[in-house]
Image (cartoon, rainbow, N blue to C red; front, side):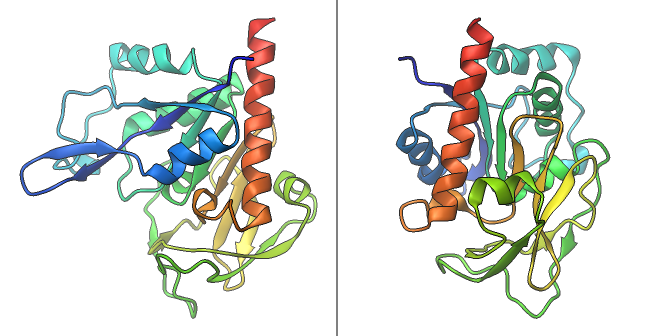
Length: 236
């Protein structure tokens, strides 16, 4: 059986003071492999230095650059939009393409925030609540409460559970998405696009805890099942 091909979106970073780079953390690659997918890196199309260019100063992608991304998206069976610290226009295009073509997509942390702002960009809001949400390495920071009839609640089989957390900003509006979960201090923690088979964003990092946390594991299993179904339907 051919494994579903999962596009993993690259993020800009500096390896040192000299070399601007594009990367993805090993957690995502290994999670995709763990649950039966074949990951490949989807690189941004513009000939710019993404690390040094401010998001607001990044030019919108041209039709030709859009076609470069489409070449990758046409062969993929699922998309993972990982965490990071910058949002670029090409990522909005990827989310909109996934919605239009019903490609399974899973966004985490900043990935969820990109999904929420894809149709009408909005500024992110700095966290100023009683809970410190930026706690790297801590496996359980706060509870998430899911909406009873949300797709995510049905997938995970629970409405309340503990999650990890490492973000300093949050969204206040889900945009074209539906809110499916909140943190105990009222921040949006999960969104979904109900008209797609699997289009879910979460504010936490299930790629880091699937080996010890059943909710994280079930989320990856459901995503990969959707990608497998998409692959089968595409080939028919």
